[in-house]
Amino acid sequence: MSQYDFDLFVIGAGSGGVRAARMAAVRGVRVAIAEDLHLGGTCVNVGCVPKKLYVYASEYRQSMEDARGFGVEAQQIGFDWSTLRDNKKREIGRLNGIYGNLLTNSGCELINGRARVTGPNSVQVGEREYTAQRILVAVGGWPQLPEIPGAELAITSNEVFDLDSFPERIMVVGGGYIAVEFAGIFAGLGAQTELVYRGDLFLRGFDREVREFVATEVAKKGVKLSFNEDPQQIERRDDGALDVTLKSGEVRTVDQILYAIGRVPKTVNLGLETAGVELNSKGAVVVDDHFQSSTPSIYALGDVIDRVQLTPVALAEAMALVDHLYGDDKTPMPNYKMIATAVFCQPNIGTLGITEDEAIEQGLKADIYVSDFRAMRHTLSGSEERTLMKLIVEQGSERILGIHMVGADAGEIMQGLAVAVTAGATKEAFDRTIGIHPTAAEEFVTMRTKTRSIC
Ligand SMILES: Cc1cc2nc3c(=O)[nH]c(=O)nc-3n(C[C@H](O)[C@H](O)[C@H](O)COP(=O)(O)OP(=O)(O)OC[C@H]3O[C@@H](n4cnc5c(N)ncnc54)[C@H](O)[C@@H]3O)c2cc1C
Image (cartoon, rainbow, N blue to C red; front, side):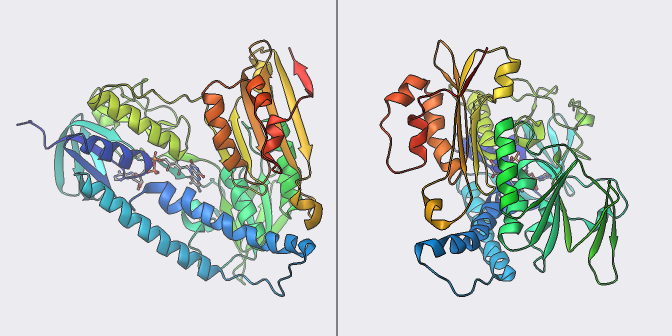
């Protein structure tokens, strides 16, 4: 009989925690998992899932406008926020139930409440202390608000999905993918939308050409872009609206101000320091290649280690860790350099591998293929939307180093390309591939003339 209550105590039932708990439990490991909010974590409750549902909602108005060029006319386009919000709530409730069943059916003990680490092998939830041979910290992150007067009047991604009423005027602050996506959602749903970012161009880390292209496209969709700006103060007016004073001195009146300026690891008051776990300056748990912290019995993964904050990455980390601890250790560690990802703005961004600037910084010799065109749909829709596709190909080896796309369904298209590139596809393999006609994606296998070379 083990000296511990559990073999593995997982803190946080989000993407990474649930996957690790289930995978371990089905191998016969005695697992407990503690959650103090909702099962499924950020992704299911206030992240990927509700966001994508709202993205879908935001695209109908544009589709109906585009339809006119095809002879399809809707007399009136209405939008009811409460229908969207409440249908979303119902769907998330259904998913919460599924997560609960998955955990209990796999044999995990589900503990409701806030967990606190009290030692290398002990965790407290409420009044009760549990012991475990290993502890897995999968507590994710938490959105931030700035330290400016009136910041408490602003909302974050935690609140935005469940607003009582639809904001007719909204300011979104931030330059990351979440800010850009929310700006697209509210503009698409009909709100007067301004995106304010303190830098000179949003989406830092993405390919420069993509960022510039997206700025043009997002502006075409009616989002006012204010770069090199930053709110300094927020005040509530008598009529309930908010006056936001910007760095430039200009004042905007809006119904909501949404901050999406990054997320911090949720390690405050978690007790990790008392157990000897090293945290970095941002509060992220420092782990080695096998997700082990400076306290050997304590592991961490997902957003709390602040590597790549994406659900599939947390899932891949969880599978690799469980296989390392309780399996044959054959699951590879995630390759953080080759992660396909999408931004669900309008049009979407899909991206994989390195950017052109990274290729230059790394001193690589590469050929760049770029195609910028109007998708067939828009020859009749009348929309000015354009599509961008870009390949970065290493000279000599012909290896595809990076693929970038801005256009309809870029995320869907990139997933298939990611398989090919992960399998080692070269430009020659792309050229040999017969296209599917007529699609936008066929452009990726017909780009024959290089746009420029870097060396
Ligand atoms: C608005 C938004 C949109 C996003 N969109 C995408 C997307 O499109 N694609 C994508 O891949 N990723 C997206 N993400 C990121 C994705 O949600 C995260 O990367 C992912 O959820 C990380 O999983 P995790 O397990 O590390 O943490 P989380 O999913 O955050 O789970 C952590 C869990 O731990 C719980 N917890 C915390 N502290 C304690 C404690 N002390 N005791 C008990 N429980 C605790 C929390 O309540 C939470 O349920 C988005 C995020 C946001 C905010």
